[in-house]
Image (cartoon, rainbow, N blue to C red):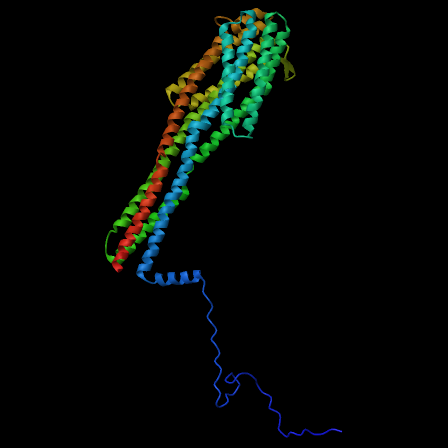
Length: 479
C-alpha cells in the first residue's frame, strides 16, 4: 500500500543553472553578481613586434632614411665583397697559368723530347759501333738526366691519386729498364754480336710503345690543366659588375630623392660613396678587360704556337730515330701497305716527315713577327735538304750499299744528321721565342689585376661609410 508524500511543497522548476548574474540566470536581490575574468590577448612574437615597429618607422621620414642608408651600405659592401672574391679567383688562375700549369706543360713536352732524343742518340751511337763519339754518348746521358729531372718536377706538382701521378710512376719504372736494354745493346755491339741489334730494337719498341705514349699522356693531361686555368682566368665577373651597376643606381636614386625633398644639389657622403663605387667598377671592368686581352694574346700567340712547335720537334726526333733504326734493322721489320711490303722504319719516317712539314707550315702561319717566323722558315729549308739526302741514303741501302747509306746518315759531312741537328736547333730557337712572348703577355695579364682584390674591398668599405655618413647628415636635421 502506497502513501502520498507528506510535504505539499512543489519541486523547484527546471531551468538554467550557474552563478547568479550569468546569462540566463537571474540575480537574486541582496546577492552580488560573480565577475568573470577577461581572456588575455594572444602574445605576439618578437618578429611580429619588430615588423610592426619597422612599418611604423617607415611611415616617417627619419625611418625611411635609415632604411635607405642600410640598403645602400649593404649594396656597396656586397659589391666590394663579390668583386674581391671573383677577382681573387681570376687572379689566382692567371698566376697558375704563368707560374704553374704552362711551365708544367712545357716540362711534360720536355720529358717527351728528352726521351725521344735519347732514343735517337742511342741508335746513332749504335750505328757508329766501336767508333761512337763522346758527343753522342754525352747527348744520350744528358737526355736521360733531363727526363729524370723533369719527372721529379712533375711528380712534385702532381695531385695525389691523379692519372698524372700514375703516369709518372710508370715512366719512373720504365726508364731504368730502357737504360738497361741500351747498355746491353752497346755491350754486344762492341763485341760484334748481332744480338745487340735485337736489344736495341727491343729498347726502341719499349720507348715507342710504352714510354713515349705515357709521356704523351702526361703532356695531354698538363695541357688540359693549362686550358682549365685559362678557362678560370678569362670569364668576365658578371656578378660583381651587376652589383656595381645596381649600387650606382641606388646611390643615384638616393641623391635624386634628397634633391627633390631638400633642393640641395649634393650630399657629400653620397657623392663620396658614388665616387668610390665608380672607381671600383671602372677598375674592375678595365682591369679585367686588359687582363683578358693579354691572356687571349698569350694563348693565341704563345700557347698555340708552342704546342705546334713542340709537336713538330717531336716529329723530327721520331723521324731521325726511325731513319737510324732502318739501318740497324736492315729490313728485319716490315709492314704491308696496299698489298706491298715496306720497311717499317722507312714507312714511319715518311709519316713523321709529313707531320713535321705540316707542323712547320702551321707554325709559320701562327708566327706574328720576324723573330718567330725566321727560325721556322730555316727549319723548313733544313727539312727539304734532309729529305733529299735521305732519299739518296735510302737508295744506297735498297741497292745493298750499306756502308754508303750509313755514311750518308751518320757521316761527318753531308749526312742527314746535319739536317736533323739544324732542324732541331731552329725549332728550339722558335720555341724559346714563343716562350718569351707567352711570359710577357701572360705576365701583363696577371699584372692588370694586381691590387684589384684589395682595392675593391677597401673602396667598398669607403663607399659604405660614405653612404652611412651622407644619410646620417640628413638624419641629424630631424633632431
